[in-house]
Image (cartoon, rainbow, N blue to C red; front, side):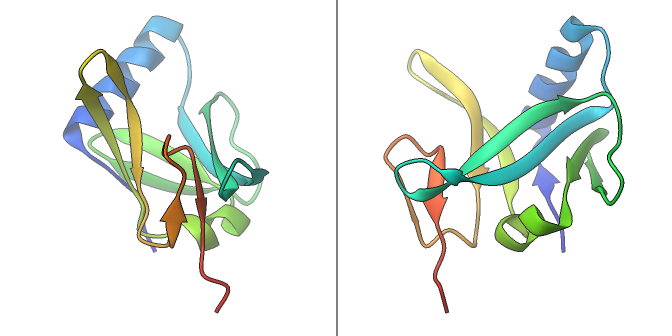
Amino acid sequence: MAITVTETAARHIQGQLTRRGKGLGIRLGVRTSGCSGMAYVLEFVDVVDDGDLVFEDHEVKVFIDPKSLVYLNGTELDFVKEGLNEGLQFNNPNAASECGCGESFNVDAG
């Protein structure tokens, strides 16, 4: 089980944490929502929650709860720039389909 972060994404996240002035890393999770069924949740972590799993890649810590890991195992966080748009991209091998904006996804039931 693993969550990975590309070098580009790690630089972006470190920059955000530096500008913010605090934080242990980022929390990645899912919630039921979005146009495809599940939406990614991303937030800064100041306090570790009981049960959090921690993955570290390129000196960035990604915190995730075990329930979300079921849907996110193997996901790679990348930072992409396309024209005037830029942001984190979730390369999730568990996603059977994604919405057009890439912020929500669906998994196979079986």
